[in-house]
Length: 311
Image (cartoon, rainbow, N blue to C red; front, side, top):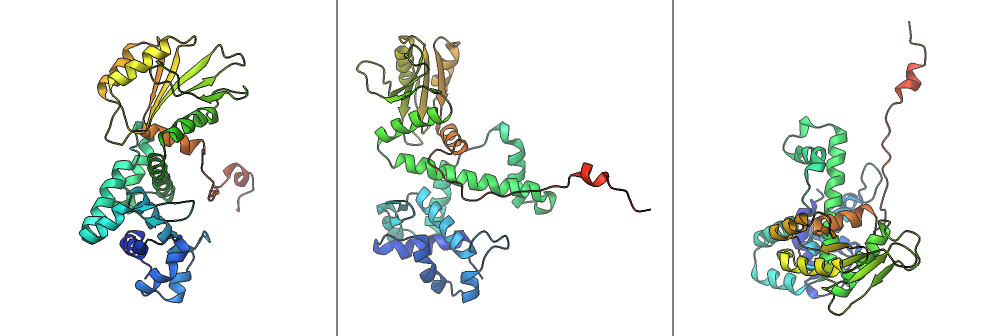
């Protein structure tokens, strides 16, 4: 029987223990040998034709190991065990490693708000399979894939230099339509005594109006406080357009959020946390590729009802 991706994770980590850089396809044969898969099981495809089942599960296993920080990605598609991975393999049981993966991945998985109530409802179908329609189960599967990609996005951002994060958020705002047709509308900059303005988006050709940006690439448990936001507000208040966006990979303290709300739009400050950041990156496809498109059809009853019924 083809193992589930959760069952593959530990063995995949062990295969990487030598320090070699490997791809998912490189792990296919050694893992198939470990799990004693037949040739048919190793080469089986999904009924939909969308790829090999075993290889797909290996890829999912590696993505979870990456999100948990147990493997690194030297470049696209390559995986290498991290110092954390080596340390845990030598000092922890498989149960402890799996629990660490579960806790870490959950911490880095974007939490869905009330605007996704229908998806949240579908997400519980694991406990009540018979209560949900195929459409709800499809929505649940899509949401899980999206959350996994968002977690990978966040883990990747945290593995890069802070300067790369500043460039990323400028590109994101441009991808979202800010700056319009203005040439070179996005600029990464470090100004002295500016309260930490990391970039600007020009909204007109002459630059009379612009959006000030501050980017903080913080660990997930290091929330941005009121003092940092207040310093940024002071810098934005001195600009002609008085508009600013503060973006962090973590979140904001209640004091910081209450302070921004008390400004009543003078100046206008938007706070974007890690969950919102990865949501925007995913929705606007920044640094992402479309893997597959599923076309779901339904009956056009106007078409069929126009036909004469049998007597």
